[in-house]
Length: 444
Ligand code: PLP
Image 1: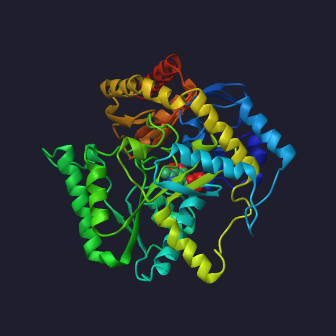
Image 2: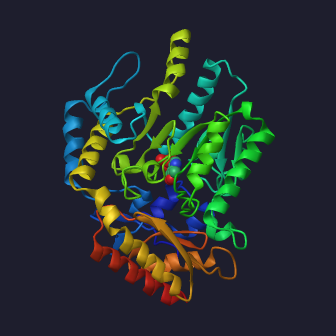
Image 3: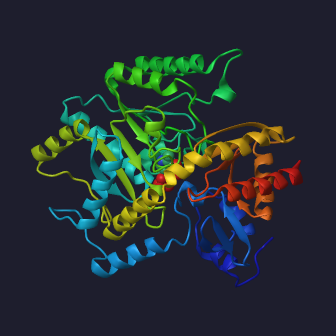
């Protein structure tokens, strides 16, 4: 339905270029105007209330309308709204958040650099890896591995690492240095009679074959989300991370854990690297770091990763990188307060405690006529639906029906993906899945 003239929807169509839409379709339909948020709920401009089943973009851990984050931002805005970390300057909020991140992250990660988004962070990690290879006198060691269906962002480098066709097609990204290996999607890709450990061994073998085909001396790093998010919530099968890490170690290839979605409690532990026994050289975080109240991302790295980069900057006289907003004082102050809330309210524990109920409700949807298989860990999960006439048609129809029922969640293909705020309660999980079941009934 075309929005009425002069409505916010119509004005939006007239002036704003949106993300992740068919622009021509958007001109006809416009978007849903979200006006307010409170707890796990958001409200549109007609006052209709929705459960935000994806926490915005997998990010609003502490929920909407958290006054402590407003106060932290206001305090910092009044004291020092902006300063930078260029040219031998620093400021308290960035130092304090870096210290906090080092305190709560795996022990070997001891240095932090701030950026403003997941894409920027991954983009910079690629640059740092290339800079480091040069510093180590290994200029041929530049290729980057990732997986098909991986999502690492949309800048030129991070978009190239991303393994989703929609993020590549027609963008002419320079993919030459980026190589994609198989997706560990066990339920979909397993062979007849293949166990999870056998499947994981096959994934590791495919990775090793790719490395040998490319030449191990040309490969610098592999980027990977511990649990793949935007590719459709793909949970690693048993033995996967041990097998993959053994291959990377064998060929001296760095591992970058992209914890942009997983970090800060999503899996029921502070980081998914802990959940899956991953020892990354670099860990990229964003989203729940500030509950997305402010744009913020943080790259955590080991001393061994950082040292050659520091030496190279000394040789050249400068590390020729930095953004105006790197370590932004208001963003880092909000990030620190957000992490304090996550700790004080034990939101990581909440995710762990409510996970069986959350995953149980997803599993129960397998019994619905439209349900195929469910998957998840902590408070992130998905239910795969039977495809309709065209791939994604069922997903889109159920997503629309869920909106009617007052639930916002993301259909990726025919998978309904959920990633609610970490503050969600047992009653709210039930209310969300009751509404989802009604939506499924409407479409079935
Ligand atoms: N990495 C992962 C795993 C993500 O899920 C995302 C975004 O969803 C990104 C990177 C990119 O982050 P941003 O959208 O902040 O650039």
